[in-house]
Image 1: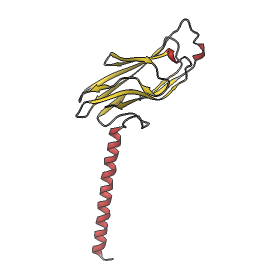
Image 2: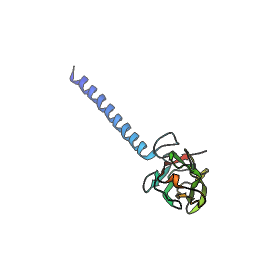
Image 3: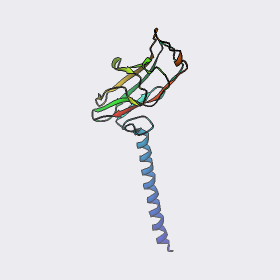
Image 4: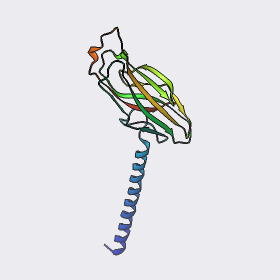
Length: 173
């Protein structure tokens, strides 16, 4: 092979490697900043336009509750995009081993104001209606899960039971 052909071949290989390196690093940047979208992915939510901040992760693990206990989990969502976004807050990968599921309730607060209440989901489900967040806005959320003390019911069967799930942000239309 002539020296000219070797130089051309080396140039082509060099350019191909350069393009692959750029594409790989761009893809890694995209994955690191986009997290996920919807509830089909096993990690936390949304597009690159919403930044979710959990001080202790999106996983919710509650055990050894005593009737009357309340456990809180705080997180914030920031719209880093250029448009208003609509989303709802959901709990996925739910495991609720309590027999008396109606004794476990939740309160979801946005910026200190209650926006949703109800019985903690026994399976995957939404814990909020559709929420709108404008560009550049950050909303703080607190999810309070309570074990209702029922003085007329025997709650002994639920001693040592647990609740777990993962908080997701699911984009809506």
